[in-house]
Image 1 (cartoon, rainbow, N blue to C red):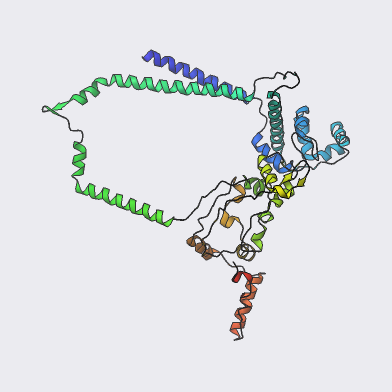
Image 2: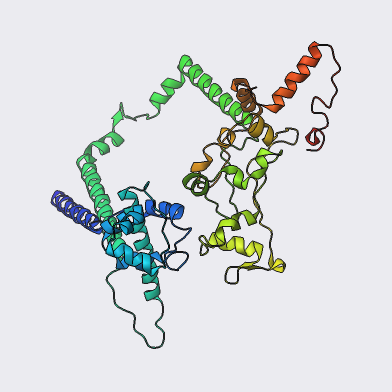
Length: 423
């Protein structure tokens, strides 16, 4: 049994070494991080370029695949105007080829950033090419043979890792069996031991503890406190939906729009500055960009479907519209009045004060508890800024009138504002 265990241990070490070498080998040619490159590509490049289609600029997939000089590509993307001014042959040729249209320079991108973008574009283009080759051949054409795909490589690595795990489990089972065999006689003796001709009472220790009144009282006290605390917390958090994250009809990534692209919240939620509600943005706001940006995305196709928009003809069909049924996340009780404009315009609070790090959320969830206690604590610690604020200037005027004993009407106190009655 021990020799068999030793063989398994030696074999498992060999498999581990092979798996490590295979894993390192699969990354030997990696030059950048495609995931980081995707975020940068969406933020910097999608206004003019697509991977597989000509937009304002050329399709980047074939261009970056044909051009293998990455050092030149990095210099071109960071500052192509400098290369053209220096009469670089490649740069001048590209400049003339595209009818002398200047490309935006990106000096803020580091060499690593540009490498990540190039890696992402090449990876996506290779994936699309592999998918096209994997499809059925047309007109008797035979598909071009290519090397093993990434799926095959990762499948082999998965089989190696799975075999290694199975070997480890078997090794542990063998070791456990060895211990049981060595202690078998002792276990058997304990089970059959007799004291004065009577079997051993295994519950004797527990019975002894149960007779200890101090210990019993202590256990009951701790149980009562724990149960009471759980009951209090459960009742206190009733109808508090902190962390609530419903599934929305469109997966809108706030981390991309508000985070990577730094789009102001009020570009979409325009009501936050001037009304009680922040308002759900119209899909037409989305179409300001997504008529040309990321048109192939399934999520963008949902917007086209809801608006009855045909991306091929660039026309709307009002008979084919469908309502977009968003699910509300932040709900206040009907008796609680909250005015966005009062907090955003008057108090000059940022959206993150209540909604949390919205610029980092892949999908929005309720960050704050939105309880009365939470609101009161915020009101207690927030200082009021009277300078340059028309709202507080009006209150100061009212106070001065009261000091002088003059007449103060309800209108001066905001009594004729629409929100006083209609909300």
